[in-house]
Image 1 (tube, rainbow, N blue to C red):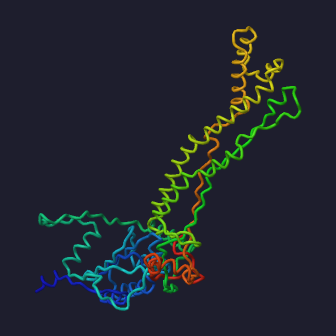
Image 2 (image 1 turned 180 degrees about the horizontal axis):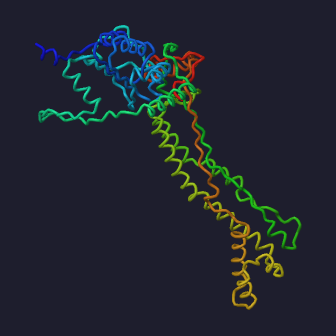
Image 3 (image 1 turned 90 degrees about the vertical axis):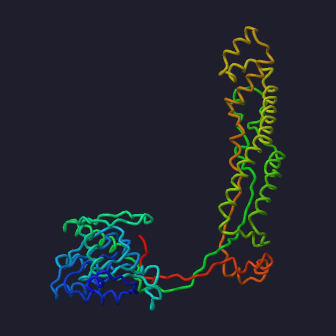
Length: 434
């Protein structure tokens, strides 16, 4: 009969009140491990230990998150630290299961994280296990790091990895608890008692508005002062050169193939909500953005090769023609204007090169290196597809026109939002996490 009692295991339901009643039955010993503690629990444990003069060890998670998650209170940590001689506290990282050994009984259960949910008024499914002396002694052996002979397991049972529960010196433990208490005082956690349950929702669709700006063209003119300042010619000579004509800019900004590609992507991923913009499912947003980025990069390269490079070549050639006309009959200026090319000028003076060919090479070199005529890459800043994502407001959901659009697309009125419940903190509370 005794052996059956020692080996019994039973599924149970445990809440804070049941846990305290279990502790109050202690007569010989008490070992408890929980993520955190409440003042009421610590006071009850101290009273039991002092009145019955029994040994006690209390394990807790030293991380401040244990309190922030709602597993305990800061004041309880202070109380434990102040009464270490009675409670013999120890710490272990990431405790999430509650274990209590009282005399020859072992209780294991899952405590409620009050930052996320309230303790239920009625538990309809077991959340704990209570067992007899055999399991209690086995658990205590692990707490004390005693060697334990493992029974031979059936072949279809996979052994689980174990871990050591390390003991701490009192000085180190007090320091660790002190640091945690200090952090929690500087940035107090939300008091679960002040959490108010409120309805919440998550938008499953967003409104999208886009603007395709085409290509941003910069530095549309270049200064000709390095040329005009050294050539004694008509004062009406241009001081700058306009690289792109108005027609060129229209051609760049209205690249039809790019806009058609964007329309195809919009049709694949979005729903046209008329004057309200476009509707896009939140879970398709990343794929939509990836498609846009790919199209942008491809079109950027095409515009550079098919449009920009051609326009720049034509503009560069016209500038070369213009400068050649201005300087061809003023050889006395060539040395000053084209001084960076003295070797070619010397060959020209020795009549080793054709004058027309030399002038052409000098002018193009001057345009590229002195005037810094830009290359295609410098003009394509980006193909700017601006996307603005907006939540669907309550006002829109009360707008008849908008609701009519939703209904015309498979009754999206029941799909645009997902409703649930959450908790709102009191106005005088700090944030849940630091």
